[in-house]
Image (cartoon, rainbow, N blue to C red; front, top):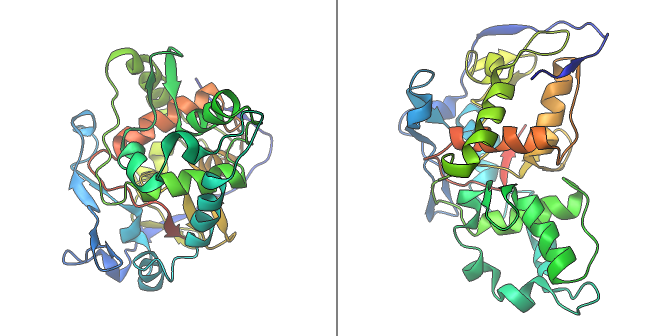
Length: 284
């Protein structure tokens, strides 16, 4: 399955390898001086033919950007986490409930949740992303309107929930009923698309660590999402980033929340199994 090509023609330049100085072996991400992050880990078994090691995008960033993520006081994403905490406690919808009405304290009830998403939902008989689960809680549990997929409210709520799992390793299941969706995502990951004839793997598997335009390519893991991007001063969700990446190949992209991006999210999340949840991370 391929993305539909547009007619625009553009050039892509991938230059010689460059790694930020923070890629030294003795560097480690420790948030607030106490939350130790696993930023390098043996590649999951399903990547054995492609990678020996999975590496967090944190290692590809400048010292200054790394330092922002290491301290919540300096991390610009944390203002959105604070806003989401207000959302968590706000009564919404016809059932006069807030998130806290059912889940009580977010620190306790959401600990570990981020590590397993996306995951198979038995009741719905499909793979569910965190966005889908949040919207189910809003509409079914609270009688409120669903939030825009990958919108600002959704991104900050994902960030709040993800914070409760920081430091815990990603452990997304890809077997059983989720396997077919995972295979679809894998197919998308390796499918070349657009006028530049690139796949996700072209950049994030074959050229990670190299300079692309003015940035440095990571392995493309999403354990740090939602991510605060300095270039646009806001939180970005996985589907928001997928949309941008596909457009960078000069192709017509799918929409956030589409079946294609759900499958791609499951596959990409599984590539980062073993790395710590870092969200909300800071990237260029």
